[in-house]
Amino acid sequence: RASMEKTTEDLVKIKLVLIDKFSKEYVHKYNKTNRFIDVDFNSLEANINQQTWVVLLDFLGLGAKIHDEDIEEKDDSPVTQKDLPKQEEPVNSVVNLKVKCFSLRLNKPDYELSRAQMTKFSAHINTRDGNLSVSGQLGSISLTDQSPHGILYRERFMTDGQKAALVFDVFKYGLPDP
Image (cartoon, rainbow, N blue to C red; front, side, top):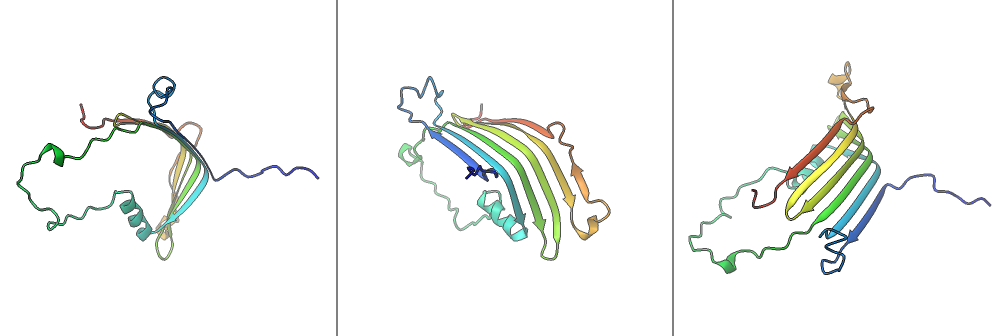
């Protein structure tokens, strides 16, 4: 009987390496980095309606902030050193993220509103001493209008995929910002 080979790729591969900061190799070999994370997604598809979109934004902390005046009470007492929260040492991390293909469908109750697809996304995220550095690229992206109004021109935005559709490099200083 012939051996069966794996014909499908895994949905996600995750590799996590945690480094003890008291290790002898922590400074020289790992450059004071506490964790290394590699995440490689094959193909993902998500369907979102208005309600799930709002829940997702709230979960990520990007939703609308509700200001409650009853919670915020003025306290005129002086702040002492023991009242301040203890400063924790920052965790230095390196994250490599890859997504082969991601499709997103936005739905209304009666019909599909739009579809977005991106391919060949990769990002390198580095958090060091409170600073954040993100760099990467996006191979291709397309946005199609699936609504009844988009019947004449379905393709609203497309890239050909021959070159990277987007190359990015972002740096954010931690606190205190110089």
